[in-house]
Image (cartoon, rainbow over all chains, first blue to last red; front, side, top):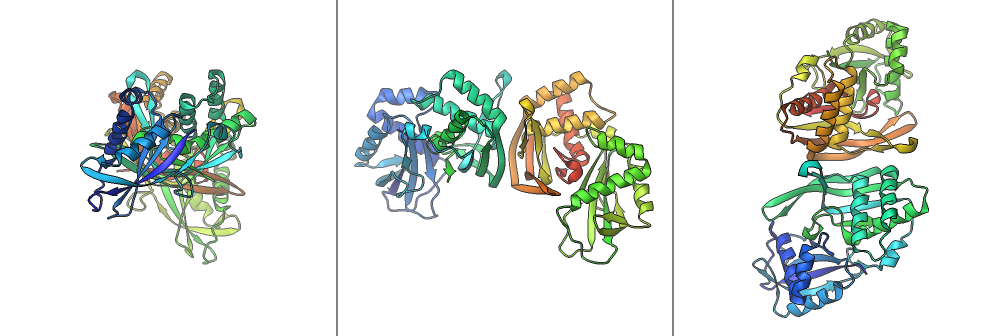
Length: 265
Length: 265
């Protein structure tokens, strides 16, 4: 069952938090420390995995806040409970992000606690209501790594409908126990190429996300996708993938805070 | 020689101008009247042409202005002089846009007169300075009509580098006496697919353009394209096409005010 939850961390020094370009990297490091504490083999396996079974983002906070909000999603059914347990037990000595120490004060796991928290079964996602269109909000810079011929790679910081659908479909195929057959997945990709259209966007802007010394540019904003398909199967897959974006994120580097995405009702 | 010029029209009733959704359509109609007055066969031929040898846009003006600014570009070497001559002679009885009458007061044909006016020889465009990247400003909604299989057509209101380059290249091949050989054009298209990247955008927003009762959505804003190609031929073509956008416009419906584009120095 995909889970999304928000951890409220408070600075152990009771001091305002210095958010730096390294925070995302440090949060990423903390998560792998926790995974290693659960099981070193698990951490190694996840680190080597082509697609990580989690996403991670530091949520922006008002200046001089002593709180840090860490949003975490898990896509692997066996990851949520042990990870949360480990976070709580590590918390006795404090959680370290870079050279700052924190204590966990809250785990928000439902939409009532935080709009970016929720849980949904794979079955529920697979049966998401089909309405033929969807607004997606990309909260953090979102970019697609588009591999090209001759080993060159290029980045596409645009909400291209086909890149969006292919990214979510590949993620679903990797993590979901309800994955489509390879033949159906191929048909879906072909249908999305014909049937998806970006019909509007709002507040679209270019944002840079720092990962240590590097930065990656992407788009932030609201986008409105239409699926023109008459096929009920294609419409169901479209609705499923749009809802799945809440847990999977969108595009590249979702374990470093990029591609934090929510479907808007 | 591609020409871009701005006509200042003043209302014959000395009254503020009512800009309506039909103005673009009326300006389009006026142009074809003028062409027909030059030569009925020319008007018919241009109307039937796959790609029109002109672009046309009404420039936004302050409210209650009694002026109308009409920006016109010509891509056919034999069109500029007769068209301008005809506009000036028709002006004796007044130019009609819908039910409003106008007199021409100014023809601005150089950048000193208006930043959207200029002339450039095909040779100059073909030898545009190559710097490997370019900012383009899309002043009016810009959209690409992307024909899909099975007769469906979709619109892409996004500054996708490949769609930009392919649109300008196809336009250049149609209108320029210095067109590339078909083999080179194919190689260029392949190179652009590998080598072009959108590296930043600013002030990007979604805009609707009304053409009578219909509307078409597109993007407006500034976009920064990089061409990573090592080939001098590819870099030259990239620079040429970026500069050519000033005259050709970008994407669909450039004769109805869409895709008004200028490269930024």
